[in-house]
Length: 493
Image (tube, rainbow, N blue to C red; front, side, top):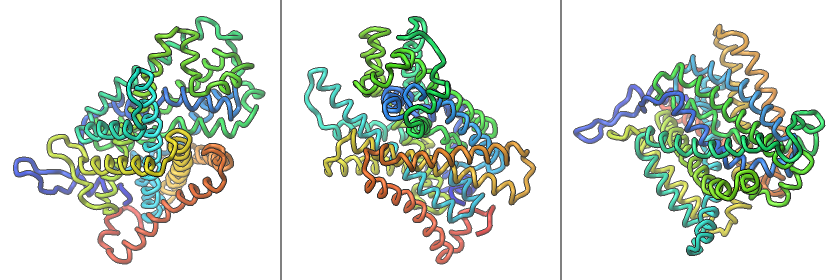
């Protein structure tokens, strides 16, 4: 089943827990659209993208045309979301990508997708650990404190994340909601100030003209735009914890894409206006990491620059916490699909969280941070740059596979879900994702620092993740037919 009937098996299976409180293997909750949107938008780390990704996109991509790339990406992902949401109506199971690929393209490829999803989200999380570690460390030094190694700060964040992830999901959603409101709030205040003051060269729509969109390297601009949306698709992971999943999950998915897309497009356009279309690339080149702070300083004053600096760290933490919850639920679904140890599929009797999976995820993060520290990797230029690049490649592959699965599933099952929802939108989304994948592959060495040999290694890593899952499924089919059959009862092998 790929994680999918995980949910079915999960809902029907119980395992003994403490005498006073049996432990179920099914997640439950009453999350509404807002709570789920907060979690997935927090995973996208809006302030981190605006403060870190957008200036580099200006510099390496298509300069003043970057805002248009966010519009293009949002349109492609909305088309993708149509098929994703339609599939969710007919396959009411948690698991997202690998659930739908499992039903549409078969158990082996579904399990391969599950492993790729775990790799992708783990890479996002470990990349952010590198960046947040160095920012906290430098912040402490700036305040007159001791020079603490980045990895020590990252491990402290991992411990706090583990505590929140161990408890009920609603606690995490409240924390993420507060942090998200703060980071979006300060950026919108800055955007409004730029609008009121008229920017550096007056307000215009030059960013959306063909001359700007196709200037420089639009492929790199598109690649950075796609990276900014990573995490929105995880709405389906929280299906069992949603109040009314058949309505909540599709709505949350559309709202997340629209919110992220409008926010990024508007804010990146405001940054272009703040410096002027003619000067924005030079401003980004001077200090890409400090561009957002410099803009806040110019248009709002010192207080805003300091606030943005602080909220950048909380934005990164929100991203880490959100992906921690996503990964732990992926592992939970895979365990209930017999693809990972059964113990990972249990639920805490009090917190109703996948506590074992959460603990394993915390341990994995700690181990990777310790490994990279021991290897002496630079937390920004290597840990963050390399692994966020791998995640960008992985997410585009995952979405493309899911689009194909949607198309194949509805064609094979002859389900009358509507031509637009089951064919047209998924096909258009697949075409858009195909172009995006070509852009990511072509520009991947640039994304990770310019090394072709390193790029080839990471390409191989992505392929290996899929192959491991496929081989695991084939071995399971050969050695344990019952376990293989439990992967999904809805498709033929």
